[in-house]
Amino acid sequence: MPQNKRLSRFRCKGCAECCKDFGRPNILPLFEWEKELLQKNAKKNGLRLDIRPLEAIFDAKSGKVITLQYGMHNAPCPFLVHKRCQIYAKRPSVCRQFPISFPKKELSLSEEVFFHCPNFDSESEFYKRFSKGKAKNERAYRKYLKKTYGSCYTVAWEVLQFQKKMEKKIDKLINQKKIKPKKIEEKDIKNKEERPILEFLVDLKEITKKERELIINRFNPKRILAKP
Ligand code: SF4
Ligand code: SF4
Image 1 (spheres, rainbow, N blue to C red):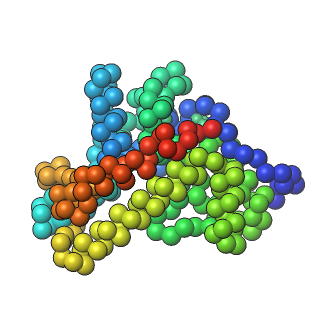
Image 2: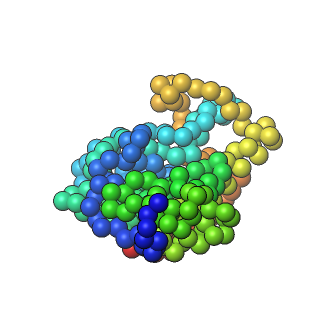
């Protein structure tokens, strides 16, 4: 247990370690609008990206693969040049939320929500505030994260809410028999027509194009302040 209980605030030191290695698995998760943006930038700069569905379900009814999240398999990140991100103002959510990573299924009130940043010992900091390694309630937990991680926390929270919302939507579509999920081998995904989740929902008329834009706009970097 650390003796000094004074809390520190997270400040990114720009060492770029998190851009060289994305952890295990060594894949950078991307939402559909982020994939589009990265591919556009890569094309402009003559870069080759390896982006594939990371989290997807096969819908036997439409014969389509519905992708909830993509993964970029290029590590170190090709947008990192001389320790600087070439798309910093438009970098993906996962880069903005680092080092916070909420588990999707349930909100863990413990130290398990942190990616490893070599310049900030998130776990020790957490133990300074919550001596048993677990926050007693969600309010105290969120307050601590907001104070310590600022906009990284805000982005991580938006990401979590979006993921939960999409999972709920998928469950509802399954219950209404509008989609029929079926297991599919990863190698077979590339032979199927693939649709990103929000576009798929527009196809199904579950949301309008305008609603898709509004959802995407919640992640607009201008809306959520840049990482400190
Ligand atoms: S978040 Fe941490 S690992 Fe990433 S650039 Fe900042 S200091 Fe380095
Ligand atoms: S997009 Fe930018 S911030 Fe994100 S991993 Fe690549 S270089 Fe780092």
